[in-house]
Length: 326
Image (cartoon, rainbow, N blue to C red; front, side, top):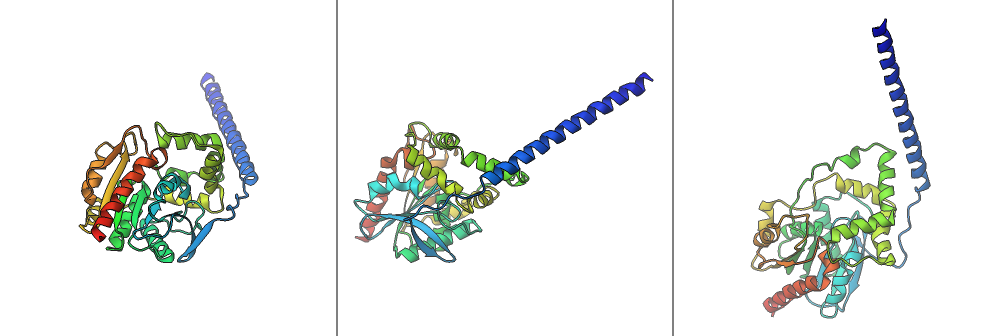
């Protein structure tokens, strides 16, 4: 009899726990659904932006400086936009023509996939053609280094020079990238919006990525970082990026980037914890660049925290390109 009573108590306890879990899940689901509905209106794209047609979609861009030979084209990294390049662009503009654009799936470029390395390199090719930019120096930050590496391989002889900034150009798959897409609805949407709509959290993530010595975002700068994640299509594009290997090429392909006709340079933050300490030198050796410039007191956003040092590296490549053409 005691055994029967104990079994009944255990069964009742399990049933109670299951009921509590079911109630919690139902409450979380209802709360997530309500939050999704309340935040379902996308933020509009700001007015007054410049766009150019790149195949089947429009690419947003900004330009600085008068037209010049060997223009500089800036390619941003993951979770970034044109805005991230402005400090460097303004330093370069007095001496050369500079343009930057939003990669497909980021910023205010139309959100049209498939967001692969090949498609991003094709976007760059279409952008150069549409903007009539000949013999450019291509500068890629982080993921952007992979984009320009693929472009140089697909379009040899077009670029006059390349600069890899906080990026090795290699494709890699990080563990756990399947998690966001595996999260069922409505939780996935609620989780995404809870992060990107929280200004304090977005600012903290930016600061941690930027590293030591990074200037605090002003309210307007924070809006420029946050707003692209709130426009129509941004959520779908970001989840597509997260679920794939990092944009880039293989190590075997990267060594084919090097050419006596291509000026190359590499610059990294010394405190960039996204790469090991050997990455700068290894990257420079692969693409035929001189010894890398390593900026002390700098994390993964050297273009933002140390724009003068990054601009100086680009100026050095422009000088080498000019010497060759002269």
